[in-house]
Length: 230
Image (cartoon, rainbow, N blue to C red; front, side, top):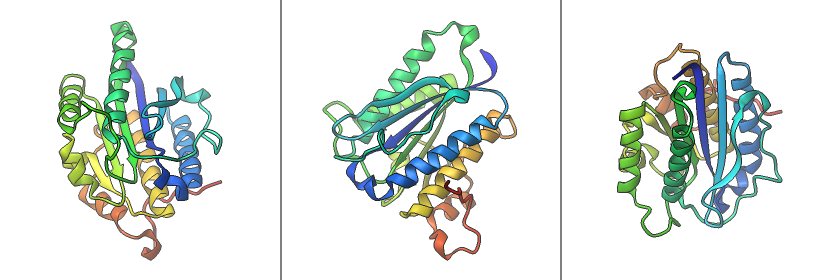
């Protein structure tokens, strides 16, 4: 494996319910990408949107973080339902196949897979089940040490994370607001930077971090990991 090389796949809900926070998704992802550009070490990134019209819309794939451009209002246009399970299974399969095709010496030392959503599964096709997804996640975690992060609002993301095979520390519920979304993306940007630079050996959330993301940041004197938008 190639040391100090991290491959990151980010899966973002683009269903209709995300419309009210579309500008926050775009702005916070810009900050997320810029944070990674400032971090030492090689990194490639894949960004995928999902909704019922397209459960696997690849915005860019396997691009060096140095050359990645942030999404904009032309590419991120939320609509439709939430095929969360289908999207996750498809993206895991695509990422796994792409990495398998690399020579062993060129494969990344670390692989990170993140999911951001604002709602539960409601539109996946036949055969895309939670049990199937849970089996895939377990395989990638145990055999290849992939790090999974699952963030959601308007439902208990920690409980749903458990339903798809994730440990409690891999999931967090963020407050259903613009600032809540921005705070969660900001926290994940910092966690990824620390993981890439080996100052942290995990992408997991502490209980305190989970509680801070779930709370209303408008009522906090110091909103957690607030990301300033341009």
